Length: 209
Image (cartoon, rainbow, N blue to C red):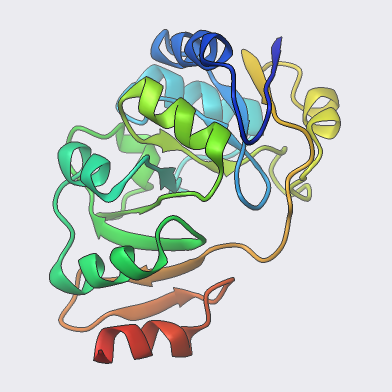
């Protein structure tokens, strides 16, 4: 495992570039988010996605969420958001709101777990955003833990538990907190899939505005 230490607010571009190269080469890297640590891999690389599942000890059939650098990044790589999705992204990104949109066929099949949708959000974390821009594509963001074990905000715990990852993009402790709220905007009206950090009442108010 290559451990790359980085300032969470002012990441060294050389360190970011080195981590991005690991991911572009098909590696699986633990990364900080605005909540907990996640596992980042190229979602269009089936081999990398299979390796991610093997590292977590996770069975196929479980969808994996993504993170992206911006709404434009999402549109270019995954497809345009619906008008309600765009309103929500304008209001709550960057931040802990995951929006479900139709999954493009270019994604690794294992990633969507047999579903027709994929979840994506723009995280509020400077080092991770720098990495996303450097990679040029959205990345996976499933929690950096063995399946059925608790996720963590501590990179030292990640290093002890996940010895088979290719890299650890270490920005120190993350803030933790509630997981992202998940909203499906693919139907006639947006629906709440998972309650989380963004209250449903705030989402409804945004959509009514």
